[in-house]
Image: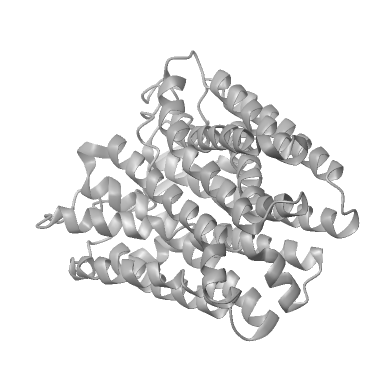
Length: 423
């Protein structure tokens, strides 16, 4: 049984990049020599950039997509929900695919499916729209599980720096897609299909740069590590629910914020730009908040502050005068960046060893993303039934309150109590 007595107090907060293959003995120790580390770094950045555009590119043109494809508010909610749900459903397949083909080849293959998913959602009517969204979400879920392990394996002495690089790549991709999709649509004669399809190009570019990594020999996978008891541990569920609830707010913003702002009278271009700014601001707080959290007795103070920033930003975007929306967008971004980084940090801080951290990460992301998918779906349902901002404000307040409650429990300085041993 893993206990604080036999293990270190906690994993370092820098260990926020959880390795999905940590249970395979020898994977980390068999790190291949890096003859061209700059090429690997460029590949990692480009792959990371592709983990959000499929999600954030849709929301600024959702009105046009819904009108063109005859989607009700509920169906639009399902459309924004589907890729988020697929993140959790397909993410757990990543370690199995890595054992079969190796992480590098798996990422190359999934970049192809990501590009195909992005293209498919622009064709074949409603079927293509939903099938392509599901394929894109599944692809992002698999890559998102594998990429951190490669970062830790190939840059073991720069994990903190690479955590920042990884975060910036995610935010850059999301911000570019949110801010440039509407201008691209206008440049193409109000063709939303073409504006969404262009986001397959970065995936193909990433594949081209990443391809040399597929020639790296596949390391042998041997030995297994048993981690048992997470589903019975209250703290594990608190961390999981905290991850899911904060993710729910994040994907509501990704999927619906521009549409909400358009309903308030903003142009699609300005609404997409505000989402882009909010996402880019997340880089600052996602890097600073975990470091500040280390100076506290536990993680409850930074969690409380970031939740307060998020709900203030969300309510400001709903009800504040439109000439102040930039301020509320920045406030929202600062809160969400810090909240996301704290959720990732808790996976390591509440785990007594890397194996427990990997399994807790799988639980938090699998169950958490399933929970998170209910957020965008609820927004679509509310918009379909009420056409009012007040029910949305109530929904955001309830989710934020639940996030705060789980954060106050998960933020205590404790360890999950599970059995962790080699087989």
